[in-house]
Length: 552
Image 1 (cartoon, rainbow, N blue to C red):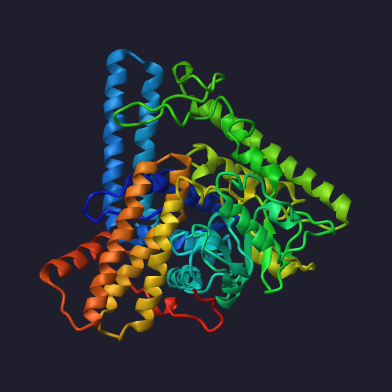
Image 2: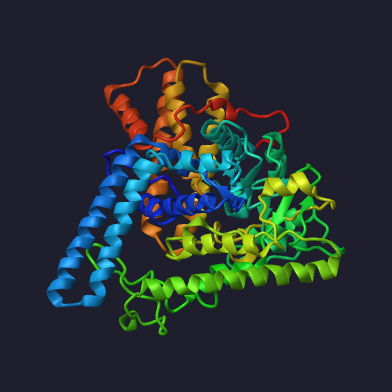
């Protein structure tokens, strides 16, 4: 979730955040509450990215969320009147369904969670039901960040922010896009003339910040060469892969995603299971594609409520049938029981091969559960109950595994991600390479400002510049540009943060040189602080050069 709060300014895209809260976060909290009432601990490992938590905790979120829910309730009531006038009896109940859903969500937000979704999840962690991990501060794509200081800052701020939310340090981390880079002589992938220079590995930065484990895609532990590196269209990626591979010897020994491994830095890695990925994620062959589940793409305007099921003809929106919640929920239990059998069979096969109990890691974007797949939270509830009843499977978090079954095998990890092709091509290609060309000088400029600043002279200006840089580093922008899903919006957002950084940096340099801000500059700083306000207690020293950092 990129930063979308608007604070009364031109909205960034705040509905994304409100949709996620009502469709994903509140239903997950409701699911956990129901499971707790039945004394079932699913031990899910849940990542709350710092930039998401910052938005959910912002005072402006609660007011915006209430207004959003009230608008959706009003729209559903208009739909209801329309259906009544047209005599569409099968649609009337669905309009009431949406009215009840938004009224219940708003009531739970206020009464059950006191307007604090983050604390709601934190309570379940304190009571041992789940484990919460952190991420990079703004989901910056670690292998492609241009300085060790920027890579370090994303992690250090992610850890310190988590400690502020939950009162302790995180044990695990979700690396943005599961993207990892080992230590090697790196050079900018968008500058052919740059000389390679030593860069720290991602795991070294994690270890220095007290992180114990993280997750990767299965191809990375098997040591296979990722596909689709855009070698023809974008040779810098092929060069980057070849350069990093000099430090990695493909394994000869058997490796499996059902085993967890330790890196030389001491961190443990877990790899994604492909079997459950397809079953739970795929809209083509997985559970979410069932014809009786709610159709995501067909909406009734202007309220944008959904009244149709996926139906047997998935491609033709005009052929969609009316959604029946009872038929849909009948299938949820069936699918939950099927996944239990998949889990048991997959782990049984691994035990037959390795003669040891394996660990299966099924990991997904949270937006799958409730947003893309409306019935997803109810599926998770039924799945946790089915595993609990079965008794042969144990639900564990990442930290649980470290405590009870420490990794037994050392591994060296290649560079890669969980993106299409297993490498960086989604986040670095001909459509979005310009963002990196713009970003790298800004990262070096912030490092210089922190190094040269006199404490107390221009701190507030540099801190706001740091926030703008962090927001520009979000991997969301390259992803949305590459996938064309919100290309224009992402280009505008990235450019806005980069432009703001450059102006703030110039103001900071002038202030350090002894010139006071003009009235216009002071107004601009205030506007930036109001519009882009995450991490109010940001510490500039997280960008200070480290003794063992590479330099360019």
